[in-house]
Length: 122
Image 1 (cartoon, one colour):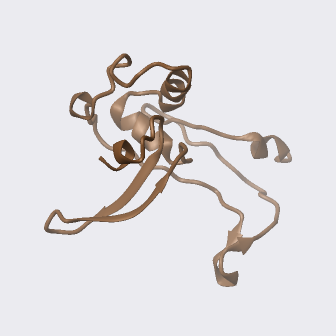
Image 2: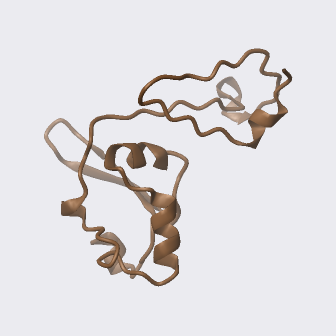
């Protein structure tokens, strides 16, 4: 309803918390796909980046078969990230060298690495 009222027609993120009694508390809306989108992709089987491009090219949610009630939830997913922020300094940017990095592997493991990985010394 929120995105409809704003006439927003593309992928985005609506964040909220749910308490133990099922009450929802709105946090924010971001008109973009966030880095955590991979969790949603894993539990729904929907490639959000691909769908966002189709929507931007003019296809509708209906044409893509994207109705909330028809999107399945398939298990659980979690995401882990290596960040360069220092929590002791109010999460200001931090620098350093990653001396050892071992990628996870196995069934059900998805690894999305970015250009920073190319800078690792081998």
